[in-house]
Image (spheres, rainbow over the protein chains, first blue to last red):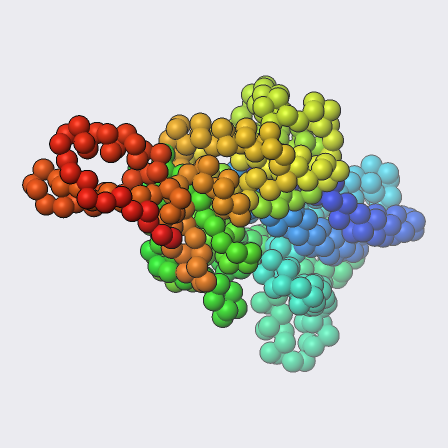
Length: 239
Length: 256
C-alpha cells in the first residue's frame, strides 16, 4: 500500500508546481558554484552539504503543505491508518530528493571538476553525507511548518531554525561555554561543515567521529520525524 | 443489525466556542441515518468526528476496532489530477488493480450518467455536478463498513439524485451503515425515516408527524397499549389488529 501512496504523493507534488522555486534556486546555485574549477573535494562537500540541507528542508516544507486539506481526509481514510499516511509522506519526500543528491554528486565526479579522482571511501562519505543532510533537512522541514505552527508563524520559525542550524555558533561564540554546549543540541550540520572546512585536502577518515556524526544525525532526524507524526495527528484532530 | 459506533453526549468546541453538544447516536449496519440542521450547526463537524478525523471535546465515542470508513465531503477539492488518474491512485491505495479500477470507472460513469470523455479531464475543470459525482465515485470505490456523505445530493440533477438514492438503498441492504447530512427534508425522508436534527446546539432524534401515527389498542393481557408505526404501514396494521379481535381506541398523528 505504501508504494501507490508514495507515487500519488509525488505526482500530486509535481502537479502542484510548489517544487519549482527551491529547485530553480538550488540548480542555479550549483551551476554558479561549479563555474570555478578545479574544485576541492572537501570544501565542495562542505558547501554542497549545507546547500542540500537547506534545499531538502524547503522541499519538505512545501511537500507537506501541497495536498488540499479535504483531500488529506479522503486519502487518510483510503489508507485506513493516519500514521501510515504521514510515514508515506516522509518516504515520498526522500524519494523525490534522491535524484537531486545523486545529481550533485555525479556532476563534478563524472565531469572531472575535482582536482583529483575520488577514492572509494570518499565516494561512500560523499553519498552518506548527502543522504544524512537530506534526512536532516526533511526532518526540519516537516517539523517546522504550518501543520504544526499555523500561518506565518510556521514559516518564520522554520526560517529561523534553518539559520540557527547552519551558522557555526560554536566558532562565533567560542568563548561562551553555554552557547558551545547549546550548539550540541542543534542539528549537527554546522558540526559537519566545520569538520569538512578544516580538512583542506586531507583524506576524510571514516573513524569513530564519522560514525558518531551518522548516529547523531540519524537520531536527530528520526526524532523530528516521529515528533511530526505525533504532533500533526494531535493538531489535526483539534481543528 | 450490528452497532459499529456509539456516540454519548458528544460535544465539540473550536477555540472555546461551543458548536454543538448532547449528540447521542447509535450507528448500526443496515440502519441508515440522516443528520439535518441549519447551516453552520455542526453537521460536517459531526461527520468528521464519527470518521475519526476530528476529536470531540466532550462525551464518549465507542468504536468497533478495524471498521472501514468511506467519506464523501460536502465540497470535493478541485484537484490537479485527471479523473481517471485520480481514481487509479485512490483505487491502488486501497489495493485494487488497474483493471478492476478501469472496470469500476466505466460502470460508475455509465450509472451516474457521466460522459466518457470526462475520464481524461482534469478535475478542477469539471462542472460542480461532475465533481460531486467523482466525489461519490471515490466514496463507493470499495465496500466499507460505514459510509459517511456530507450533502451528497448537492449539485446533482434529478436523474442523478434518483440513481444515488437507489445506490444508497442497495448499499444499505449490503450491510453498510450509512450516515448522510442533508438540507432537503423531502429527499432525506425518501432515504430513511431515521433522522437526527440539530435543534440549536443539541442533536435530537426526530419523529416526523408526516410518517408516524399512534394506535391505542388492547394487547394480549387486556391492558391498553401504545404502538408507533410508519404511516405507510397504517392500513395493514389496522387490518391485522382487527382480524385478531383487538379493539382500537384512537389513531393520532405524532407532532414533531
